[in-house]
Image 1 (cartoon, rainbow, N blue to C red):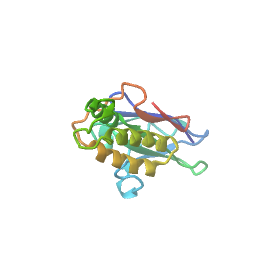
Image 2 (cartoon, helix red, strand yellow; image 1 turned 180 degrees about the vertical axis):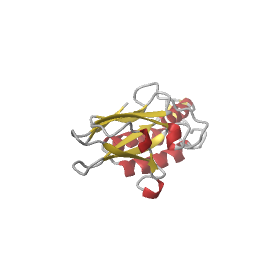
Image 3 (cartoon, rainbow, N blue to C red; image 1 turned 120 degrees about the vertical axis):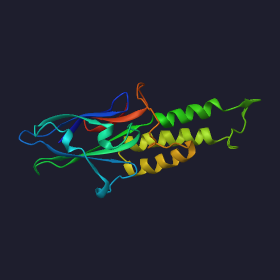
Length: 192
């Protein structure tokens, strides 16, 4: 079983994907977790109803509403369970990092440089921009290495630095530009 591709669409309201199994097998179930519910089986979201049938090549669409959110932001993990035990389940992790990039942009715009040195920003801390940027780079690296638990820890720190609520319904974190998220291609995480 392999995830051919798994990504968040440009409007951040749909997950699109394709999973392939060996001939005679299929995808029986899809389970989803966000960063708040990761690895808690009692809180997993069963989106198996988005499967079309038990075929060896399963293409699917999962709406944000299926996940109980307005927009797909932050880190999401999807587990694909095969119909029979001849193959192992596979897991793919996605991320919409637009809110964090917007945070860094906003902090950069508030930076004041005087006499070739950065002055303190509005938080009284000249290193907030550097902290946010470093955390975002580290978050992407953790996701690319498949370190989901570590990525979630970094995400929480980044949300504190940026004062972001990824589960707030008024965000519209569209992914129209490349480089602001993580998707899966041929079973491997890559930046979008």
